[in-house]
Image (cartoon, rainbow, N blue to C red; front, side, top):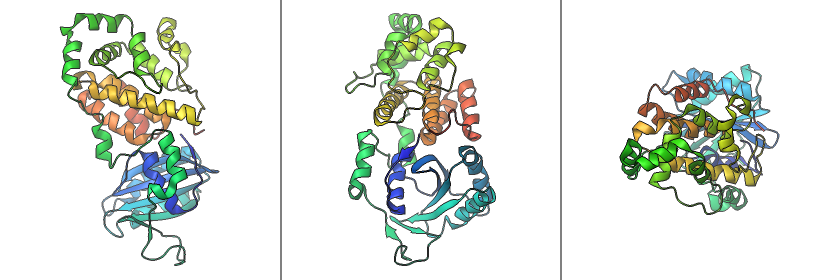
Length: 343
């Protein structure tokens, strides 16, 4: 996913990073790729221990090389003053050696930012400049709010939304056969429940425990699961690889985006479907959650949301360490192999 934003200063950019990342980063190094006036791939890693800065640079570089950006911005989020300077220098060296221009290196500490590449006190005072608050960026914040995006306070909060809620016990009972009607419906005809789960309308009906059980049961069929991934991520899988009767299950469900859609209507629809999938995953008990979490991870990785993809994979592989789709997706994320180019 790319973002066309009118950013007038590094402070504006720092203020919108949480909206793009999905949470407010801390103790982190963040790399943003720039294409013309668009922000492209965003990567975040924890700040490394002293002496391991080159390892972080090596981990970040492959995805940046595949992205082929016009320039890169590197931001260090510090809990302690000076904590990120060494890793920013390591990333800078690696990028310049690869022929990739570094537009700026920024440090954020205690609500203030400063540039390591500017020594003009009139624009970069030594004590730093306050990071703008969302009310001070009304137009920019309004764009994200209009797309129904709100950042979590931290990464732990983002991950917690995928953990099982109280209704997972009810869903477990349905899945385990205490309601044979739900089981048979879920296995025989998955279309009705997925039309509900994938509803991107303004006011979709809430998911019920029966919906979650039927959806989980349907994902036990690998063909249904993979066809759902194909529906969610146009351009990543050729529909011809699916059995016609399986692909027809989802081809009849409305989808408001295509392979290259990035307008506001498409983004809002994707955000709504993502929220519905997050809710579904939170309704599922651990023994039955890995397929839905892997589907969610495939969708969020296709969208370029690495933070939520990692969170989905963490729980999926904790629930079922040998779940093949989660393992394959984890390898793609580790190798920074994106399922589609930036648009």
